[in-house]
Each structure stands twice: as C-alpha cells, then as structure tokens.
Length: 312
Image (tube, rainbow, N blue to C red; front, side, top):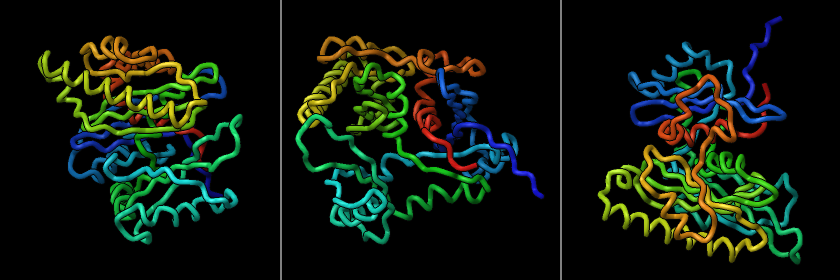
C-alpha cells in the first residue's frame, strides 16, 4: 500500500507579484488565535512556473493545501436578487442571472456565489447574493504556472474575501467592522459582520502616490479618501441599517503618514489602526511585528486565513 503524505494543517497562500512571490502559511486551532507559521518572500528567478517549481522542492509545497488570489482587475462582483431555487441549484441559477451583466459570452465565464445575510427581524423581502464573475481564460492563466510547476491549487480566492478574513478577527459582540486597506494600485473598503462580507468597494488610489506626496498633495488625498469612506458608510447604512458598525479598521501602512488621525477627526465612527499581533500569533516570524511587513503581506495573510479544510 502507498502511504498517504502527511498534510500540514491550514492553508498556504501564494501571491505572484511582478518580481517576487509571497508565501504565508496559517494554522487555525479550535481555540485561540490563528498562527502564522510561515511568512516569506522569494525573488523570482525566471518565469512564475520556474520559481514555483524551485519553491515546490525547497519548501515541500506538496505537503500544503495551496490557494492563490486573483488580481482585482481579473473579476467583477455583481449584487443580484437570489433566485427562488434550492441551495444546490443556486450557482447555476445565478449564472443565468448575470448573462446580461458581463460583456463576454456566458460560456466563457466562471461564476461563483457569495451569500449576503438577511435581516432576521425584518419583513420578508427579496434575498440578495453577490455573483463573482471572471473569464475562463483568466482562471486558466492563473492556474497555468502552478500546473506547470506541479503545485496543486485547491482554491482560488479574491482580495475582497482575503480582507474580510482579517476584518473578521477584529469583530466583537455581534457588531460589524469596516476595513480600509491600501494595495499597489487601489484601496479596498469592506464591511463585514459575523465573518460575512456585506459590501466591498474598490477605489483607485495608488499606494506609492499617497506615500510620496508632499504635505499639500497628501492632504488632498486624505480629503478624497475621507469623502469616499463617508459616502460608503452612508450607502451601507441605507442598505444595511440592521448591521451596526463598531469601527473603521485602517490596515497597516509602510510608514505612519497621519491618515489614522485625519480619518478619526473626519469620520463618524472610531478609527483603529490594525495590528495583526493583537489577533494572531507569529512566534517564528518576528519581522511581522513591523507594520511595513504586515502591509506588504496583508492580502496573502488574509488568503491563508481561508476557513475550512479542503479534503486531504
């Protein structure tokens, strides 16, 4: 008999960047904080597939459940009325609902569904879900370097849900949280409660532009960010008045530029800067004590926080 290889608990997330690959392995226990067992970055040597093949050997990637992230430009999220069908038929029914929302043939689309929790105390109304759509060719391109490197992917996720996973760690007493995080080309603002994503907004705002601006330009950026955030809160409160939001979480930035203080003075809810050390353990990754490193690996950490265990 062939002995089955022992699998590491949790998920290993791999993010393919322009010149490097970030890897994060998170282990979840039944009780206590999730643990980041591995957080590292490897410079690309050759193609994505060649670098992944090297890491597969060096890090024994076949021992992990692996996931990766689509880029924000690779997919769309559409709110739709949920069809009145059994749960097992929901994805197929929603697929037909989005055929007029995409600008390519339905046969060329991959569609997944995210539930939006109902207000249990409100009169019955149409239930809504999010349909996540991407071209099949985009999914194939995402998978291709992993296949060529013989690294088995068990999941592909999106940045909005990776951010949701982190925000959920900060939820308290049945109240939701909003989270604002900055990435290379955009900022993402999410609203979550009970580990569920209620709303996500992607706003073009390059991180380098914000960090490198002089005092005058930076203040203009701050004003725009505060306006976008407040508008999003107003929209959320109109749509989900039954979901109390306790605070706005500001994801760590590579350097302190005064944004937390500015938002705290201009937003109607408390503003708190995220420190992953308060909700996660990383005894073997001391560099994560620094906000700059947390900022760099935030999405990958969120992807590795994926709930559930894939079949071993």
